[in-house]
Length: 278
Ligand SMILES: Cc1cc2nc3c(=O)[nH]c(=O)nc-3n(C[C@H](O)[C@H](O)[C@H](O)COP(=O)(O)OP(=O)(O)OC[C@H]3O[C@@H](n4cnc5c(N)ncnc54)[C@H](O)[C@@H]3O)c2cc1C
Ligand code: FES
Image (cartoon, rainbow, N blue to C red; front, side, top):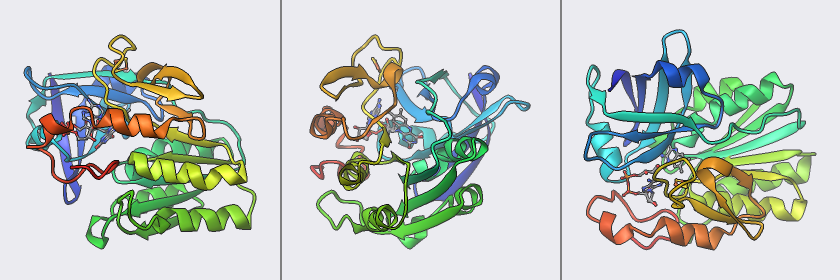
């Protein structure tokens, strides 16, 4: 059992938990995730390790309440425990001296990108962070991300794939035209990452997306998280979650994420962000 040490409500439907998990805290690296089961009948869902405290033996998770399991998790209070946490899983984020790196995040990933930004800064990179929130009252995490970054651009706007994409692509496009950008890293809803890839492709700037397909075991055995990258089948849980965004087959990722949409419909808080079908 894994005890909740503290919790903070960051914005409507966005919560941060600190959880006692010494063996995970000891090994966690930027970009890795855990698989959580809230109770013995719960489903397994992946959440990124947003931060860790090796001395206290705790890890931090930030999650968006979108369906059944995240609703259940949001109901767990400080002092109570969740049944299972497996991890750290996935390959750590690729950290090197790239030069100027732009990160583009939306939702929970505004917080989960922070360890990656910190590691990039420690390697001597200049980091410009573009973050996006759907509305003014859902802006969170900007102080922490801003403190780690050389520059922070906050954008507010609708997230629909069918909507106006300017909320993150416009500042990104401006940066790409104004100066040498050596790498772009994007984490967030699939439609945001796909748009980012389409903006950077003509500029031939290496772009990394942290993919979020449905995962079950997280060990490369069940095949649930398979994605097509550069025409090859990869498993996001063991080969990723980071992949070259220009090589990802985005339509198939979007379609696979909706596999259980009709089963989950009763729990869903809002329409699917990726295909707008719910
Ligand atoms: C590597 C990785 C890291 C992630 N990190 C975070 C994080 O730090 N914070 C956060 O809020 N979310 C994160 N997610 C997404 C999170 O796993 C889903 O939002 C969660 O599974 C939804 O479960 P649900 O039962 O509440 O909602 P559901 O109603 O089941 O689903 C809502 C949406 O989540 C997707 N989803 C459902 N089950 C899974 C699953 N087992 N694996 C992946 N996606 C699923 C569905 O395609 C759908 O779009 C991450 C996903 C991956 C793959
Ligand atoms: S989650 Fe089962 S193979 Fe990746």
